[in-house]
Image (tube, rainbow, N blue to C red; front, side, top):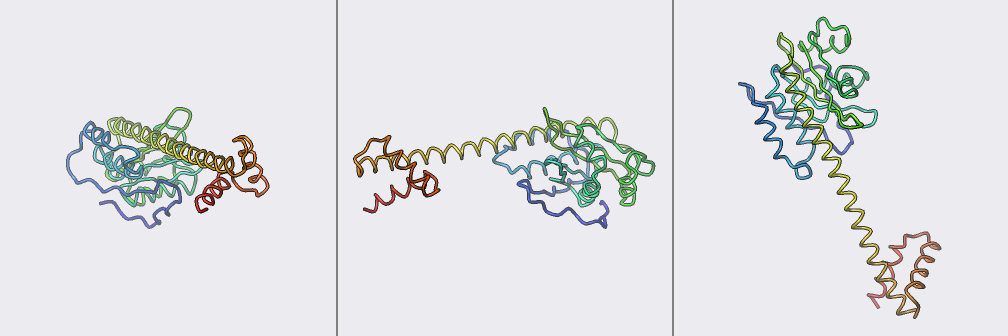
Length: 259
């Protein structure tokens, strides 16, 4: 069981993707990564919240990566990094320490898309501050893999190990596969969100056009004018009252319906 760090867990962010705590896997043999990816392929972005997808990625990575004892997923949003999913408080706290300082293996992996490893926190020279904090909490080694996508870096996946030994090449290859899956899931989520927003905008536009056409019909009948003159009348009212054309049209249609 991993130690409980003295540092606080990350505060809840206000972004759409809320952090998710993955359920620790049962002790035992490592899970076959192919079985994990087969399960992940059944999670449909849009039907399954992204936070749940990333939490499952973290949990399955913990079950599949040799030596992984706690796992977290780092997301980059502008200049800010945060943990979107984690399997334990220690991983979240160590990530948060790096975010606060703006420096550390999980930050560098997320920003560069590269693999950053710390094989021995007791003798680490590149990240001495992170290593000192991690060593005090019983972490012996860590591995962070970036999630690169064309023209942008989305974040990374981080693994922490407590016992002696390093997170070897097998662990690195397996974690890279999970990072690739998580990157695709994030890209699909972004595309889905954009598509839904576009669809919503189109729906609003179609509804606006329909009510404007109805209002033009009302004005043609009441003012005995042409459709073009009716539209000009609507536009003039909109300009003079500083109100949306759709709102003016809705008011005219509703008033006609009551008369």
